[in-house]
Amino acid sequence: MYGKRLRALSIATAISIVTAFSLAFFYAPEDADQGFVQKIFYLHVPMAIVALCGFVFGGICAIAHLRTGDRRWDIRSYVAIHMALILGIGVLLTGSIWARAAWGHWWVWDEPTLVSFLIIFLLYACYQPLRFSIEDPEKQARYASVFAITCGAFVPLNFIAVRLAQAYTHPRVLGSTGNLPGPMRLTFLVSLLAMTLLYVTLWKYEMTAKNVHAQLRSLRRKLAPDEALTPGRRSAAPSLPSR
Amino acid sequence: MRRATAAVLRKELRLELRTPQSVPAMALFSITTFVVFHFALQRSDISGDLASGVLWVTLLLGAMLGIARLFVADREEGGFDGFLLAPVDRTSLFVAKATALLAYLIAVQIVAVPAFVLLLLGPSPSNVGALIGLLALADLGIAIVGTLVGALAIQSRARDLLVPLIALPLLIPVLICAAKGTTPLLTDGGAHAVAARWPLTIALYDLVFGLVAYAVFDYLLED
Image 1: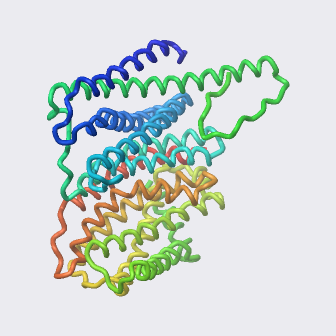
Image 2: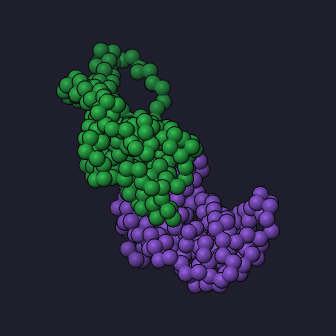
Image 3: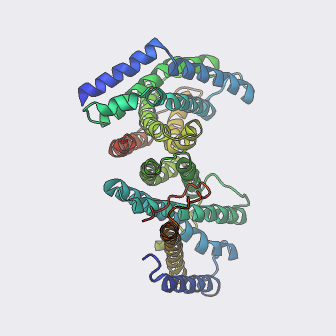
């Protein structure tokens, strides 16, 4: 049921990513101040926005899990946070590269958005250790949801606090889409769309994999009911109960 | 709910008074950390933002000890089971635990902050009222988040590892605002006014996490 439309979605993602990169390289004008380096903006910023939305989405799924008690919501929340974490590594790497190229240092503390992102990343890095160290699956799901909700609420607050802490900020290169010249704004929006599609596709892929895994396990059990199922490698990832 | 909260709180405080564990450990840890900072920074007195940073790092790390111990007795001696059997609102356990943690933090700071002033601080703090206000607001935030994280980590096998790993990033906004707010109070040449946005941001943090904890704490107790 998760596999539906996966092919169409994958094709759309591939096309939009190729379009976004071609626009970024051939259509968008070079930044007068930073030159070619500024092109990483079209990768870094959409990735950061999508990763943060992914964390919040994980929190929303966790609320649904606690309200309904349905384990599928927990898995959705887990996959959302898992994918956002992977994008988060990309955000920190591209941000670091950009900082090096623009300001000459691999890490700058007076760029509030990047610092907030690092704090959030460090916090969510504890999500999987927390899951891993609780054995009872039902309890694990519940505790992970509480964690996801708490951290989801933390994401906006953290941004406020870190931004306040900067006495002065670097002149914002491109603060919001409002002050972007037309071609740049178009490229940025297409990049954002491409990154969102990439996130959704990856999310669907992992959900489908988990679903297929559960179906396969229940089929195996039907074929050889007496045979003790070999317990797999212990993992922090939740799995669907096999029917 | 008020009676249940009062009962649990009385139990907590009586336990701590009869066999003092958390508070002496936290206080001793704080003073030891000041000594460590003295040698690590190679200064005999500090002031301004450095003093504010040393104070808040020490208090925050000391709080981690208390947070990690907060639910240990309930887990090991069956306190959770006893509480769940009683026909009372589960939020009362959260309120009681957070109040107990707040009391521990205040008790520790009554010892640790004067010790800091004696041992490390160069200029004498002039605006004591503002310092106490900031400490109280930050303690409230630490108590709320600490209780939530303590309850979250208690069921896991790696709770001693997880408590600081989860609580420290969650408390960074409090640390930022508290350290920024305290800096002018510990600066040479008399106290400057504290910008209103620091206490206000901590108050907003306390409010948001108070509501979040109120909403989710029940789910940490179901069994």
